[in-house]
Length: 112
Length: 113
Image (cartoon, rainbow over all chains, first blue to last red; front, side, top):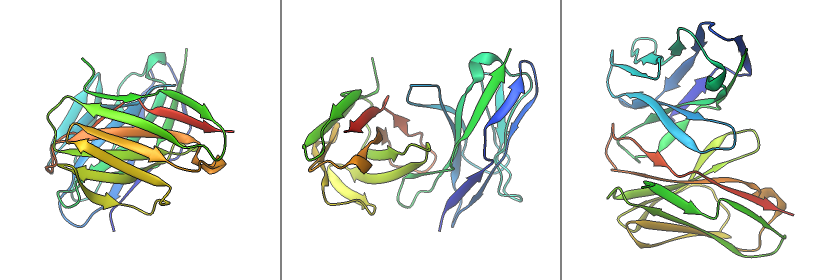
C-alpha cells in the first residue's frame, strides 16, 4: 500500500538554524508530493508541492526536492524563525483514489 | 473569500448526542473529503465524494454518515457520539486529478464529554 514516513519530533532549533525534516514514501505509481503546515490552533495549509521527479517545490524559504531514486521529499529551510513553529506534514497523492496519504507529522519548535 | 469553510469550528457535546458539521467549498472542485485528526496529530481519510457520489469510505463506524446535497457541500453527521470521537475533523476539496492541490478547511474541534 501507499505510505509516508517522516521523522518523529519534536524538532527543537534555535532561531536562524538550518532545518531538515526527512520524508520518505512508498507508493504504487507516481505520486505527487506535498508538505502541509499546521500552526497552533489552526487548520492545514499547503506549504509546497512537487508533481514529478526532480521537481523542487518552494515557498516562504522552505524547499523540498522530489527524489524518485530515494523516494524522498525532505523539507529544508536555511534559517528558521520563531514563527515557523508548527507541525509539518508530508503527504502523497496518487491519481487512483485521489486522496492524500499523510505522514505522522513533525512538530517544529523554534526558540529565540 | 474562504475557499473551504466548515462550521462549527468548536463543538462540545455530551455522549450519546447527534451532531453535524457542515462544509462548503467555492473552488468549483468535483471532489470533497473528510479527514480526522486524532490527539497525536495523525491524519486519516474518512470519506471522499466525487460529484456527490461516495468514492472512498474507510473503516469508519456507521455512526458517521456523510451527506452531499450538491458538489459544493459535504456535511458530516455523527450519531450517538462517543468519547473516542473527540478529534479535529477537516473538510477538504480538490479537483480530483493527480497533481492538483487539495485544500483544507480550518477544522472543527469536536470534544465529547
